[in-house]
Image (cartoon, rainbow, N blue to C red):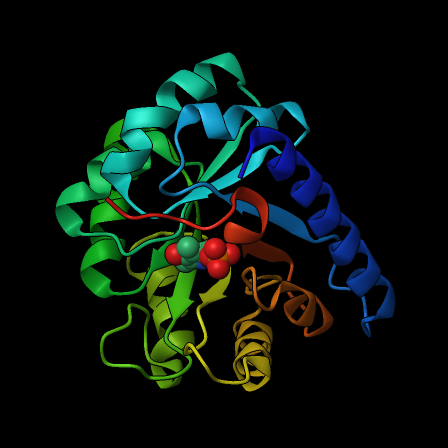
Length: 225
Ligand SMILES: *Cc1c(COP(=O)(O)O)cnc(C)c1O
């Protein structure tokens, strides 16, 4: 994938999002495209920034620390989101670097984030990740516990939760998972729903996503070291 291809693909993804926004029912508000740049270096990311993308997602705190401080210094209006599981010993670094953390999924992480917000005076926006498929290996809180957990984040930890995030099981129709996430967000009184990836972001928009997380459809196939 050349740099030019990534810019063409970004344009195509934005057009598909706009088309899906036209046909969905209701109006949950404009959809934010999160360009997922994990495994891609600053040279691959720069053309996508230059083409206008301003919201980026990464999976690992350490990988993000290696490339984003310099890019954020160049482009101060960039919003950086943590999408991957957060270990409590990384909460300090995550609060320092990210503008949004989408993977709040357990009591201990909520407590650590709360402590770091107080200590650093920096408040990333927060999403609770829900394990809609109840997959044992996957991060996210059980759907049955999600609403109570959002309340505990607020009442016990003093955190403002902005929305819910899910990653449907691979190889399954994502629609029931998108519906479940939207219903849980409604019940919890949360306006934002982070759902949909390269394979299903248009469907996610139809089902009420307010942000979609698109990696390979913009940057090309990933190779893991
Ligand atoms: C990698 C990743 C994405 C993007 O995946 P693509 O299929 O490449 O679009 C989205 N969300 C999360 C949480 C990810 O880890």
